[in-house]
Image (cartoon, rainbow, N blue to C red; front, side, top):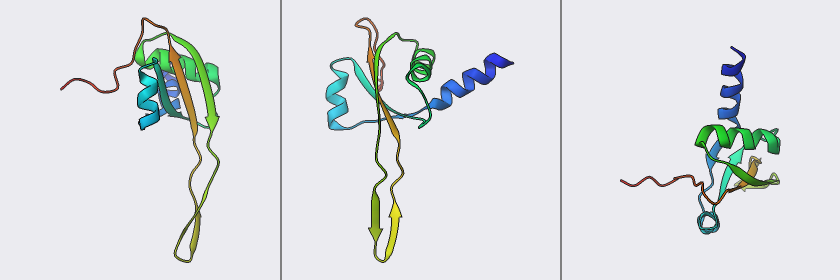
Length: 101
């Protein structure tokens, strides 16, 4: 039962891949960007990526985005902050984000 709980937590750590022009160029260098849970450590992120995608992680860089204020008319709000992880994989491994149709 404990393994099921930890597996569920690992899956919930990684929210979604970040796809932009810059991150698409990083894919050519075997680096992938994901939005992850704000409280996740590098070791947790590494375990989650290795479990979900069945790859070997070589290096992880993380950064937190700053909460930004946004105004719509008279209303002032905040953009949610998130934690971004840049994952570098071993040369032999890759993650297929765009499956062939």
